[in-house]
Length: 626
Image (cartoon, rainbow, N blue to C red; front, side):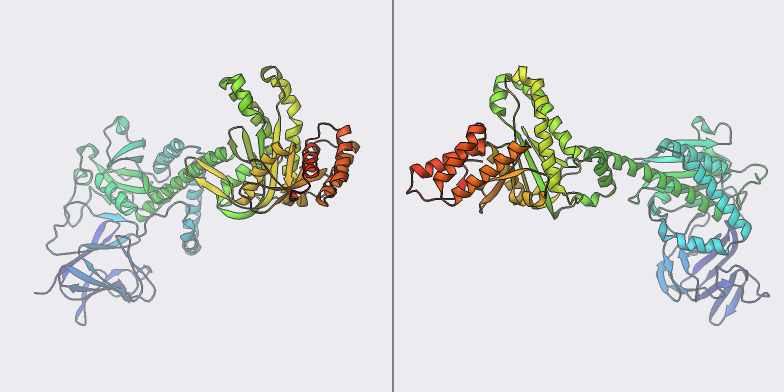
């Protein structure tokens, strides 16, 4: 027994042709003016049906060949040289390609649709549902369709193109001033009524497995009193296929009429003529809302429809989808701005406002990479001793005040605040944005920190009973810099030996009795304009090679310059093992500057060598601790 199938061809939801076949069938437009449309004609071993006029160019003269297959299946072959076959489920069959598909199935061509079904299928148990051929495009991906749209507009009649551009301008004007989702929903519902001339427009939001009405606008009295309900069937298809669907009821299909109850599943929408629904997609492509409209069947057509006054035309469905896509783009923009603002607020905890704004727009700058940076550690001296004396409440207030002043110094010089480690601050220059003058910025920050101490001490002298003091260490080198942690809480900063050494240099300020110490790598980047002196070479914990340290002088002037020259002269004599000459120079320094810590430390090393002449001389000092 031959496999049989039924072909039904609709135009604007009106049935134009119905036939049952068990042999191959070819469908196409008229091949000549005298060929009668929608009439079966023998064509070799099969049949041919002309389903379109000569001027309907979306259908080729020879376009579709249908071959019945066993098992309720049909082979669809695209015999056209240029036109594509669009399947109702979103699939396509390109020129000269075939697909074997199960019945029932549908094909769509603008306002024309074709249904293939088994002869025993119960037809017209509910009105036919139509959809646009392509799935709705996600927000931000419209570049994939714009070229074809532009081509279509160039080939469209002038009055159609002008009308469409005017409609788009109206949609843009309606939505561009919306600043939140509620405004978008209100304007979109009104747009369905005022711009597409539907009787009712609604925005439906997903609420688990059900839908809630976010906005409802109607020209029909009484609709907004809670009795209006959407079609669950339409919504289920929109949610599943993420495409625009429309459906018509109340008009005759093959001699049988259908009520709104069969379409809507509820008697509350009696008299509804047609419905259309289009998805509002998120950036991830999920359906977050649906634009839904219906047109009521009145005694007379409204006369304002955009193609089919009594139903829904394909053009109207496309306009609803355009409106839904505009809402999706607006909501995506609002969400992106919200995330950008939240990111910027988080970034401003670490970076300057300008850099935070740049990072919010270019988050890739936070990705891990090896880069040249300058690291600063600043420690509050005597913290443990003072905090024990003044108690936890005063300690928190004191440390907060000090760290606030120090942080402001970092931000003034466009540094990145990396962390607060108890009573210690860590900052960085050179990342995430490149800074060619990073060493100068870090050193100037250190000098500003030191300059802020008198004011801080004045505020806390009565509470502490002593001035607030700092120790600052700076190092320059390559580190691995990036973001670590989670989206909820993250830490941005550097890791590696460059960081470890900067921390050790800060610790060395205690042993060398210096205010600000920098490494030779940082000193080499400074250039002129900063007064420094070489202090010594030290071996620090967990660093294999000896490190050359310099003091960044917090005081300037002739006396400070003379001090630097004298000290470096004494250090040179020490390295040459001319200990007596070194002691003589250091003694002279301490007569004028008895509180110069580095001179006191170096003199003790000189004295140790003089008192123990047989001891092995080591020019690099082993620091007694971190």
